[in-house]
Length: 210
Image 1 (cartoon, rainbow, N blue to C red):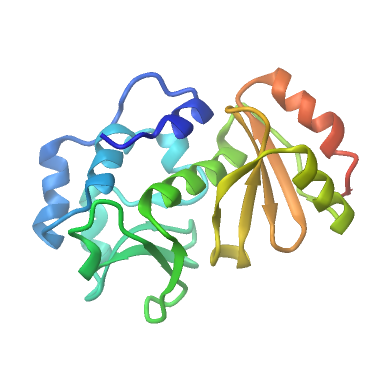
Image 2 (cartoon, rainbow, N blue to C red):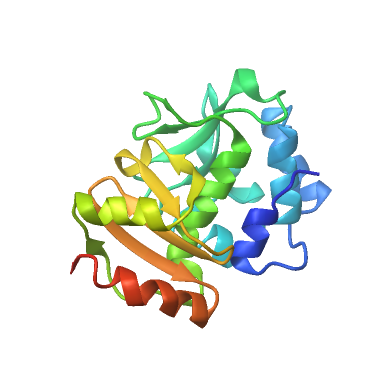
C-alpha cells in the first residue's frame, strides 16, 4: 500500500474510509488500467469528505461518466470546474504517474511529477479550509514576509506548479500548514488550537488582511 502518513497526520485520520473494489471497478470499466497509487488512495481515503470535498473535489466513482476525455483520466476538479486534473491514458499502467492540469481540457501542463505528490499537495490545500482552526482571512505579504516564512518554517516539499500560478506549503508541525500563493497571499490552519495559535501569533502580523 502507498504511504499516506503525511495526509493522515495532517487530518488526524486513524481509520481507513474508502471505496470498495466494486465501486472502483466502475472506474476500471471506463478506463481499464488504473495506477496502484490511485487505487490505494480511493480505497483508503476516498470517502473522507473534509479531505476530498471541502474546497476542490475528488471525483467519486459514479461521477466519472461525466468527466470522460479521450486522452486523460480526469479525477479531481476545482470547485467551479475552473480547472481539472488528470492522468494521461499512456500513464495509467504506471504505479505512480505524473498529474497534469488543464483549464479547458484541451491544453494540459504538468502539475506534479507523481500522483503521491499531487494527493499530498491537495491535502495541504484542502486543509487550509477544512481543519479545525483556520485563519479568518487571507494575508498579503511582501518579499520580506515570504523570506521569513521560508526561513522559519519547514518546506512541506510538495507544491502545485500550475494551479493559481504555483502554490507552496510550509509548517513546523504534522497537523499544521501555511499555504503560500504565487500572488504573495497566505492563509494557514491546524488541527490543534495550540499549533494554530503558535502560527497565528506570528503570521497575522506579517502582512495586511484581505
